[in-house]
Length: 167
Image (cartoon, rainbow, N blue to C red; front, top):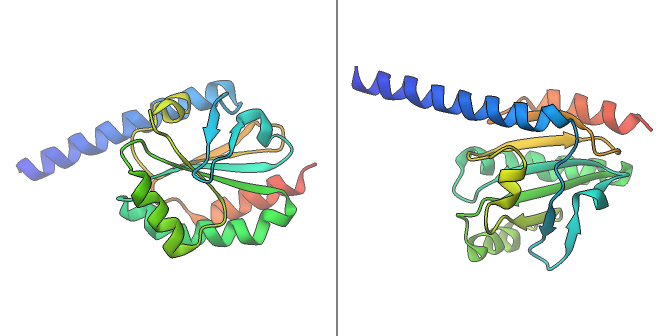
């Protein structure tokens, strides 16, 4: 009985956080203005992503679902990057640079990886506190859809292809 009560509370907390994230980002419909510092030393702002369809994905090295999704994230990036698709993977502040770099080295990730050192990026995107959470933005920086948890890959591909087809 105690376990089911804890499970109910956990689901309620996740639902509230998801609702807050959803409403914060969807209220403006635009990508929040933040500065990204990639692991490979590049600095760029949200506005620099305009002109490309972009997925900003919050993940963590200790997140089982995130690691399960990474092969799809890699495949989507590789398949669609020539059509103007950009992937920005934002590692949460509790991740260590060493753990992030080890994954990059072991798995050869070719998309942009950012470490949210102080949590400012997660805060700007609606207080993202759990992973994975992904946001798909069109070429104008407008939010197409957010994806929370172990989301439907087919839905993501449909949204991505439709968004890429728009000028």
